[in-house]
Image (cartoon, rainbow, N blue to C red; front, top):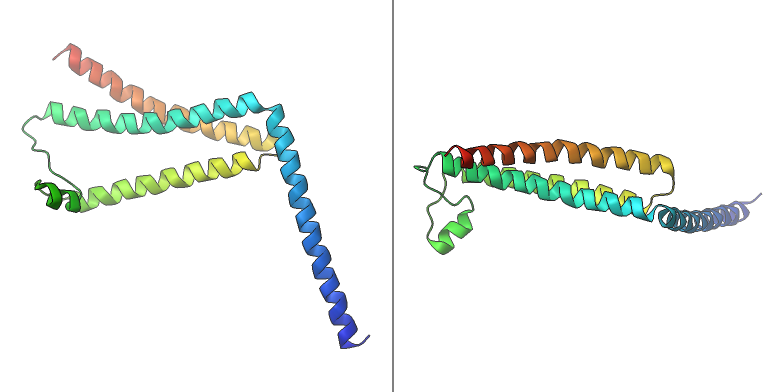
Length: 162
């Protein structure tokens, strides 16, 4: 065979490969759509648990901060965000930069976790994936809800024995 014939054959193979990928993707999306219709209630329950995970994590954060301020009222609140401190004439925190970095890392963690959840939810095609997703959601739910319950119990105890 000549070079031109081999090149044309290569182009046809590449075209067939692209067409196969498109057909495969369309079939996966159709399968995913049907699978999600079969398991619609369970997927909605997982969505609710993911929302509860985020809320309980931030709830535990706010309760912890409230307990620190109530336990030590002599602590003067300072602004960690330097821009807010300049705009509103607040006192800047000395270790505000490390606190802002910690918040940034936490936000990146949540963006990654929720993005992975949404991606897996969008391309869910089998019970194996659903099982793994369920186990991970419940693991994070138990872990972060226990943190919230622990902090909330401490707050209630603080109020009762004040």
